[in-house]
Image (cartoon, rainbow, N blue to C red; front, top):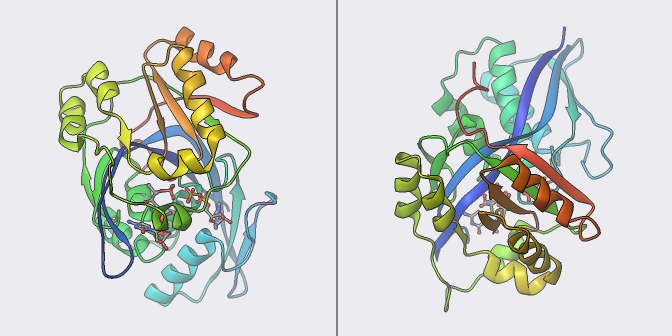
Amino acid sequence: MQLLEKAPAKINLSLDVLYKRPDNYHEIEMVMTTIDLADRIGLTELPSDKIIIDSENQFVPNDERNLAYRAAKLMKDTYDVKKGINIFIEKNIPVAAGLAGGSSDAAAVIRGLNRLWRLGMSVREMAELGAKIGSDVSFCVYNTTALAKGRGELIEELPAPPSCWVVLAKPAIGVSTQTIYQNFSPDGVEHPDTQGMIRALQTEDFEAMCGKVGNVLESVTLPMYPEVRQIKRQMELAGADAVLMSGSGPTVFSLAHQESRAYRIYNSLRGFCDEVYVVRMLGYHQLLD
Ligand SMILES: C[C@@](CO)(OP(=O)(O)O)[C@H](O)COP(=O)(O)OP(=O)(O)OC[C@H]1O[C@@H](n2ccc(N)nc2=O)[C@H](O)[C@@H]1O
Ligand SMILES: Nc1ncnc2c1ncn2[C@@H]1O[C@H](COP(=O)(O)OP(=O)(O)O)[C@@H](O)[C@H]1O
């Protein structure tokens, strides 16, 4: 029998870097939420004690470099489970895009194995374990809307954003998160108003939320990849209510209250970008049940 888990992508509504830490990570503050663009993970027990990654996507490694593999290994080692597992990954989230596809796959494996092996882990326990794999995995375990602090692993849940459309455009480049953080300089950077963004969510104020989007990593990625700036400009011209790069990029998203506006933005990107999606905001706990 195969156990299925959804692994949705995230976007960063705001992303601030506070300072570089002695461990070379950056202390950050981000407001994150999930969107209705998801990988699908299928977990099937194997008779022999091994982990198999079963994915047809050419950009996804099928060995221990895969974050889903690492999640399964960590669960097996932590709970001393001797069973093997086949992990089927239907990849719908663009890879190395700033949408946390790999982290979300890892989080889905943790949630799925917790169910399959009846381990009784709480969401907090799963998030803490996930942090050992990557900074974004804890958030992805929650699959909700949250303020993420520390290096990204300290999660405080927030109300879901007002319902709206999200148009995503990913140029045909992959961006290394590590390179973007390494090249970040705080000098002259405009910091987003994180508390203002939180208030906008608490008051369910769509316009205020749009006014508070901001991502300091744009100061690195935009000069490095001019096509990202070009997509931003195109979305703004098409009348988006808000436009921002997600994470370290290169995906750019725009928010639109009206469906017709979302499709106007989508159509305006023809010829600019091959990978464009129109999705809904999620941001609440529907995936944990
Ligand atoms: C920028 C963000 C925003 O959500 O997402 P993506 O663009 O990757 O989706 C995250 O902070 C990415 O999280 P994640 O991709 O899990 O990062 P990790 O695997 O833990 O770290 C990758 C590398 O990024 C750098 N890094 C990461 C997180 C952090 N707070 N400070 C850092 O300096 C480190 O150089 C690290 O070696
Ligand atoms: N399950 C996975 N899905 C996608 N990428 C993965 C996965 N496991 C490992 N990776 C590797 O992680 C890197 C970052 O991928 P991803 O998580 O999609 O992007 P981002 O960190 O920008 O959100 C890629 O270079 C990819 O080779």
